[in-house]
Length: 344
Image (tube, rainbow, N blue to C red; front, side, top):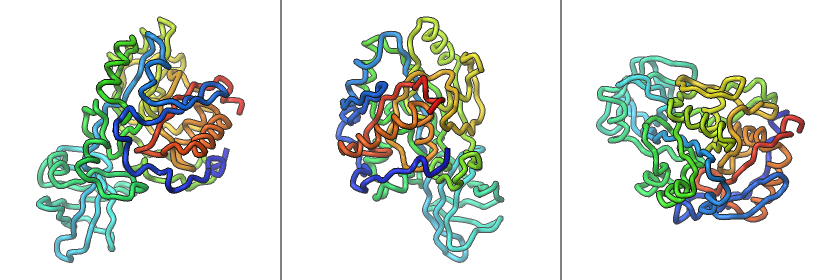
């Protein structure tokens, strides 16, 4: 398939600029075979069965956006930290009128950072103090570029899942934003298991696909951890004949990256650059909770591979007609893995 196969026209006013007033009050479009069902997200427990397992990404969004200037010239600089690679080192995208050279010193508030080299499009930065502490003090929540306001205190709370634990992402695993404590309690009460993985979303999540031939696109590598307890929970779920439900594309990519050919999963950690397009053979995930994604994006390709290209086209057309809210602060879908997706 080609990049143009994943294009669609979205009215600008359907791009959510603020989240729903209550996390679980967002809408949920259930795509069940060829049927579409308009629901509320808090209906999710009733759509799952006792013994099913929800797998969630517990990464925590860091304040990865830094605004400052070059020492000496005073030229403005914006940094987006892509990943922390040491206590005082990070890789970042930099935006400046002139590209900073190695040795350049950048000041972000009270923090001084030195450019020490390049790794592809990223700059290697050395901080005078621990990176995470510096970002917490001087940084800003890195809202996606399609959200038209600067992050404020409200965004710092809401652009974060209620179960976020491990700091390291520059973008939220947005399917998880719909869960609140009451919904998590309702899921447990219904006998639905909860398990956790960690995938730190990198700055590459904002990078567009530029190649019309999808085989020419390369994903940025992202770090993940799949704990032994989660691998054991997946085995128990499979043995009981229940379903594994990934909350978000990041959880799905973690599970499928760690899976063996026979579908078994063991504890694992490392980096993944898995790029899922139609024709991919899913080995672990049976159902997927996900938001609505950008045209021509790798995430739209992933959900098309999972649920079927034509089903996703129909679901997106329905969502636009019914005025669902799109993207990070928008509404959600519940997708079934399509057995015949390989033949579409």
